[in-house]
Image (tube, rainbow, N blue to C red; front, side, top):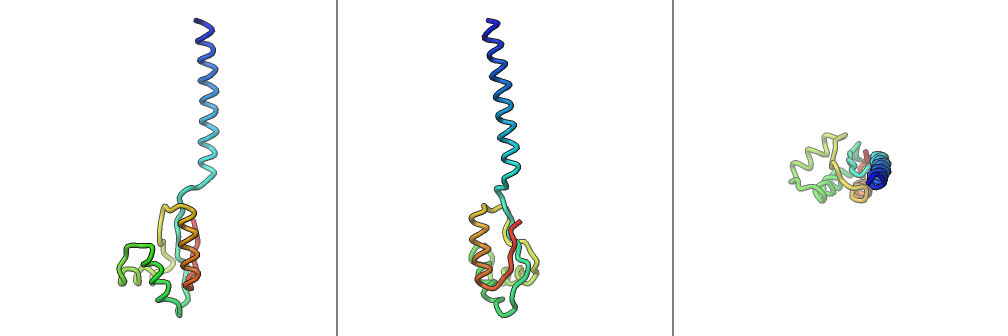
Length: 100
């Protein structure tokens, strides 16, 4: 019985060290990103508004107001792939965006 108790303690301590290492890796790799519109070209304002409407559920007036408030957060808590896609589309339309 003593051998089983000792082995159980050893496994428990190894398991604890393993989960600690996983938690530190998760902290280092960010999984949720925010997309922020910094500015836009005045000539491309309509294109930027259309792109903002494409990935949000905003109406025309709300999207226009949002774009005009630049710098403003467009979308929060998205995956890196989705954030990259949004950034490419806004840049193609004439806006300047950053991923935080």
